[in-house]
Image 1 (tube, rainbow, N blue to C red):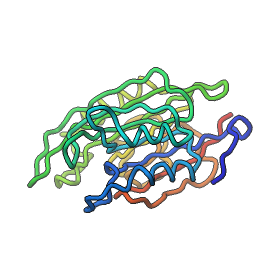
Image 2: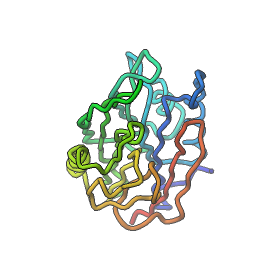
Image 3: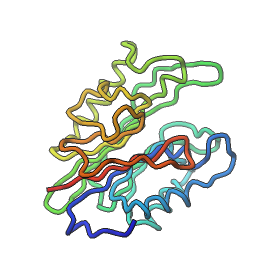
Length: 237
């Protein structure tokens, strides 16, 4: 996709993507960074929320590549838990064409679930604000616990405090124009009790946004990861 002059078109292209630490499911290789850069360029994204970003002791090579090789020059990360393939850690990030201000990070309650060799890691969220023309826009990224991996349902009352805490933290950042990309690990978007609509209904990965709906049908792009990259375009008055 060719680059678009945002100052004339007044649209914002937003994406969310669980990049699986840059690795294919079941593959010890690491094809991810190159493909993440390529997809950002092809989709001409303005904002991208990322989950399962790999971090090392000094930062994230993937985020460094995004900032250095794409129009998303402004990146903020949040390591959360041990990497699936140590050493290092795994976390979330925001990448933006526009400077990110008032960045907030939060770790969500860990329910301490265990099943076979699986146990629940810390998950969390981050929010920020950016200037787009005369508008100030709130953006965010959220990653929730994969309850299904433990034979549990996200809507069980035992987990309601986690959703309430996530909604509270995101609520601090809400503006009339808000976009939150996330891997909610459930299509029950209503569990995050906020005045936001999902771009991709009935999907685990979605962009929660204030009205109106995307200006064109949202897309779901297959990737090397076990998650697609979800993209939606919004008209900004």
